[in-house]
Image 1 (cartoon, rainbow over the protein chains, first blue to last red):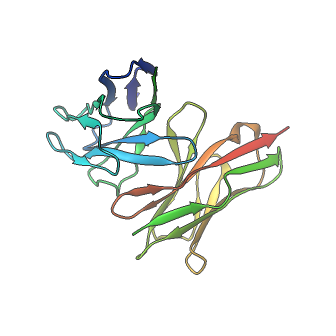
Image 2 (cartoon, rainbow over the protein chains, first blue to last red):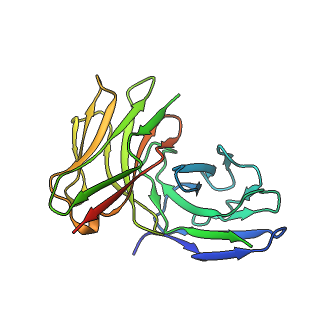
Length: 114
Length: 110
């Protein structure tokens, strides 16, 4: 089945640690995105990538980093610089048109900082 | 700049009664608009999208939305609610990026 997978589903982190969230897609999509979701705030864009080896900051990139070494993969690292990292993180992908093609979402990773 | 306002944070209906989730948008040009649904601890699923074709858009699971330019609205409706419709719904407008509304939680009572 084609789709987007995110792992792990739940992640716990101690303060001061970096953690990496995985996102993989087998839809042959060029564009990939990371969003953060907090209660009552909808989704906010962290980073996006239109093609391999290229990515752009979204609205709330501070404290996060990404890489796009393969078309299928777009991992997100939450660094210790992110002041309030506890949230639900969603990865999405779309065809060639960044923000114009329909975005398909993964099941999400819930990150909790202890 | 684009923006979207979902007018109700929570909506409660009885099973079998109509559903209305309200969304107003702001856009400096003809927008693309979407409705997504999210069940608890799940990703978002596309319900329907409007891209300047027919103003009445039919989506999955019996949902539809009507684009009204004069009212800058894109309300989501369903004639008869089902228990499985209980979820959070997001109205989204496309500008130079996707702008998400804050969400409306739909509760369906038996």
